Amino acid sequence: MAINAPEGTYDMLSDRKLFWEQFKATARSVFGRYGYVSVETPVIERTELFVRGIGEATDVVSKEMFTAISGANLTKLLAGEKLASKSRLSLRPEGTAGVVRACVQHDLVPQGAPPAKLMYAGQMFRAERPQHGRQREFNQVGIECLGADDPTIDAEGIIMLMRFFAEVGIPRESMTLLVNSMGCEACRPAYREAVLSYMRSHEDALCATCKERMEMNPLRAFDCKNEACARIMEDAPKISDYLCEECAEHYGRVKELLELAGISFVEDSRLVRGLDYYTRTVFEVQVAGSDKAQNAIGGGGRYDKLAEEVGGRPTPGFGFALGFERCANVLEDVGHVFPEARSCQVFVASVADEVRTDAFALTQLLRDAGIQAEEDHQGRSLKSQFKLADKLRAELVVILGPDELREGQVRIRNMHTHEEELIAKDVVAGEIANRL
Ligand code: HAM
Image (cartoon, rainbow, N blue to C red; front, side):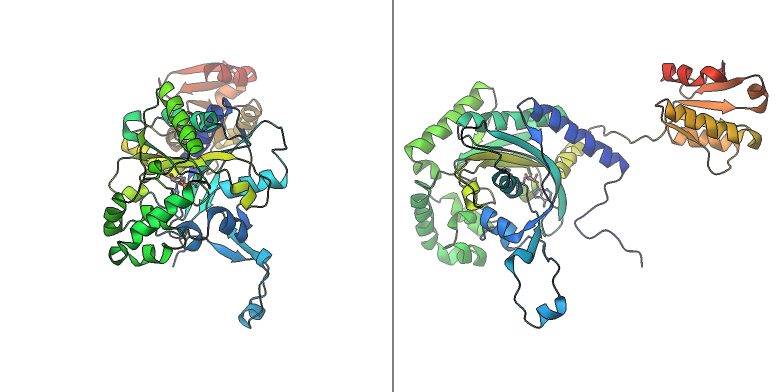
C-alpha cells in the first residue's frame, strides 16, 4: 500500500509553494516598513521552554505538543531509566517562546537599547484533531517586539497586521478585529479569583475539563468549546471591571491609537487567547465561518513577563502570528487568483533528430543569458513538442530546422499570437530577451 503524508499535514506543491513565497515576501515588505527584520529559530526546542513559556495548563502544551526524546536508548528507557529533562525536545507549537528564548540567549535587548523588532515564518506543529483550517503541521508568519511596553507598539503592530491582510487581498469586510486587555500581575489575580468563585457557583454545569482546570487557570474556561460552558462563561465577571489604573490607561491608549488610524475593532472582554503568557493587550482577527474554532486568521498580544519566565531579565514584549493556510482558505472563498508556478518561458523545439545537439547547446545558451528555457528530453515528435511547450505555458518556441540552421537562422514562434519569424542564430538570446 502507498504511504501518504501523515494526517493533518500536506505537501506544499509548486503553485502553493510559490504563493507561500509571495506571501512571505509581502510580509517582509509590509513589516519591514515598521522596522521588523527576519530571524529563524529552531523547529525543535527544549520541551521545558514551552511548558514554562506557554503554560502547563494550556491545551497547546498539555495536549497538543509533539514531544520527542533525543538520543535516548529506548531499551534502557523501557527498563525504567530516568530521562534528563534536557533530552526532552518538542516540535514548536508556536514561534513566540523560541524567539524570546533567542533574545534572552543572545542578549538582543541590552539595557537602554531600542526595541528588537523580529519577524519569522515557518512551520508550527500541534497535535490537534485535523479538519478544514486546523492542521497538525501549519505555517505561521509572526512578529515579536521586545524591549518596549508603550501602547504605540501594540497599536502599530495591530495596524501593521491589518495592512498586511489588506495587501494579500483579504477583504476588510470579511474580518473582525477583536481586542481586549488581560490586565497585569497586579490586577489579574483579583479577576482570576472573581472568575473562579463564579465558576464554583456553577460548577455542576461545567464540563469535566473546565472543572479540572478551574484551580490551575480558570480563565481557560472562556475558550471552552462546550456549549453549556460557553453559556455560563457569558455571564462571568468582565476583566474590564478589574483592570488597574495603569492597565486601563494602557488599554485606553491602544484603542485611541487604533481609532486614530481608522482601524475599526470590537471589544471582547471574553477574549483570553489560548496561551498563558499574555498580559494587557490581546487581539484576534476572525473571519466569519461555519466553525468558530477555526475562524481566527491571526492573533497575538503583549507578554511582559515571558522573558523572565524563560530566564531573562524583565523585558516587555508584544507580538502576533497569522496562519498561512487559514488566510489561503479565506482567499479561496473570495475567488482570489493564485499564482501558478511556471518552469519555462522559452521552449527549444527540434524539427529533426540531427539538430538535437544544436537544441541542447541553444537551451544552455538561453539559460546562461538568464532566460528560463527548456527542451525536449523524451524524443517527442515536433507536434508533441509544441503540445509540451503549450502545457509548460512557454511564451516563445525557438524552432530549429536543419535547413534554417544551415543558413545560420532559427525560427521564433510567439505562442500567444502564433506569429513566426526568422532570426539570426547568433543574436537569438538577445532577440528573445527583448521579446519576453
Ligand atoms: P495562535 O492564536 O495560537 O497564536 O496562532 C496564530 C494563528 O495561527 C491562528 O490565528 C491561526 O490562524 C493559526 N493556527 C493556529 N493553530 C493552527 C492549526 N492547528 N492549523 C492551522 N492554523 C493554525 C500564536 O501562535 C502566538 N504565538 C501568537 C503571538 C505571537 N502572540 C504573541 N506573539
